[in-house]
Length: 393
Image 1 (cartoon, rainbow, N blue to C red):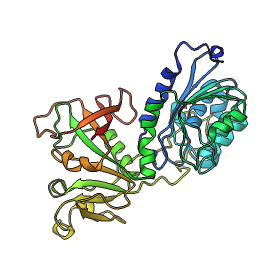
Image 2 (cartoon, rainbow, N blue to C red; image 1 turned 45 degrees about the vertical axis):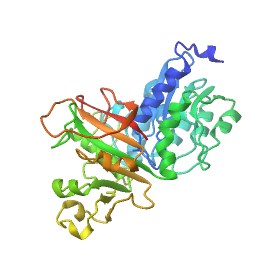
Image 3 (cartoon, rainbow, N blue to C red; image 1 turned 135 degrees about the horizontal axis):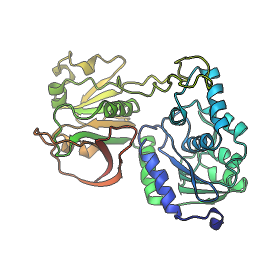
């Protein structure tokens, strides 16, 4: 019964919060879908907002639940940090660092189930995609929500992936009211890259520009650079034009990715065991293969260009997208958007709040905005923002 939650906002408002949380990690979660979750108590107060951040780690529902329990019970957060440090040697600077970390999933799920203390009984969850039913690298989120005693779960889109579908039935068997298709179109657009990657392949164009469209020279902060390198690490190919290779002599690796920097020195000696910096999982990012779109042969390129020296990398030169490519990020230059647009379904455009008297980005394309980041996005500095766009054809 909706009245029991005292909603002052409607379901669409809370689902929009979940959608925005998920879009911040779009593509970073591949080969998993980007998913967001918002938890409310019976009075309609937001208890936690979570997103899936990286495949192999906590799903959105568990991240929201974990954040909520940390805020509701200081003992839960303290005891978790102590036991986590004891088992994995990872320490956290403060509560916010704990809530934002990439946590070992099985340990965290088990701790939640053993120590939740009924604090989320009767709560409501808004999830952009049907909670998963299967147990893979992470336990079932549908089972987790049912065990916590939630009374209502609102879902944006059904999960059509046969391996994970069926979560709604688990929820209903647990006595939870389930409502589907809230903000369905937006939730389907969020999940589209995941389904494309599983089927025909997901290809998007990435551009860095100033506010007046300049793309030459170094643009963007170190945080933005790390974000782009993390995106590269989930791709099997990075696409680039032959002229860009010859002029810019790029490396196109993932050396700036920060996924493995998830532990921190502790500031409260009573909370954790002695210092250690051992990550719970091997997160070393993998540099993608490179697709150079050019009419020239591979032998025509200078072998001393850094991208050719990256270990265990394949470099392909052709006019067409490599066969079997599942996730491809095309790094476009000033005039190469039109050259690559035939292959891509989406565009990711980073903007830096500056003007530069330099060569401007040139293209002919119709785009529809799907998500525009806001100030405070964890991937960027305050003077930067980015947008995901659908390329209209």
